[in-house]
Length: 402
Image (cartoon, rainbow, N blue to C red):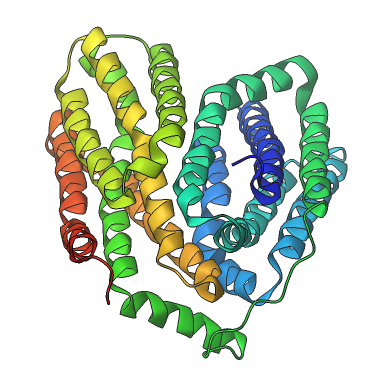
């Protein structure tokens, strides 16, 4: 895979980009927490400015990614992110800490233009037999930074402060942009029949998803899994305190165990990706995650909770790799940006809804009940894949048409 210049270059740029994002996010989190004396309103705004752009600019960014040349879009997105961080630093030096939130919002918004463009380049330049391995490698990269990102970001802020953290973030974003410049020149891709004005193309993207059975199925599965993830994400601290009888600092070990397992699982999937259909990979990942989720919610033993988190983390790359591979394979190149820019916000939107109601459900019922509901939702998401799985199996058995 690394012999492919597009894979090699994009992965290297994503390493710098992920590192910059983690350093920026933890610098902002820790600085705002200190400056506002842990004011929960201002601290919660950090999550808002990180996630809101996904809703506001996901489909818009995906539509523009289909209209613009992907290499140029990625280069300018990373470059403007670096400039925005530099501008925030200048404002911050004059005492305007609110600029940190604005800068984070701008940078996160630019990512909604860059990510769909990367998917377009993979669609265009990665052979079909390597595509699932590339998606697994991308998920492995995410897992690496889930483990190392908080450690690196916290260390740099504590040792050097907010100024050095932001300067380093800007340098990393700029480095990502310069690496992407080395990609071959963009080639023109034939436009879809629905090409036209921006609004017309945006509507065409939504219509394309609605009329594509595979994409409709994936969208519904993403919705169920997103809601399930949102239900449990804010409650992890209660697992530590109520179920395991530990203090809240113990949560970091659970997160690191889960992240390390994700890293190992992603590495293995890269090696076996060619042998397993993405539909089956996704189905297995969802079912294992569902069982582990319910078990984690019911467990009162540290060793069992960690074991289930490791198993869940190990199979989590199956979900991401399967979904991303199916998205790319079932989407025409001209619609890649709009599909990616629509389905990801669907997942995030359902996750936020789940996060919003999770506390209420816990207080009304119990912690175990919420985790069981989350597991059931994941099973529902897996069951929605059955028509797609059976249809594909039928096509494989029927053989090529004569």
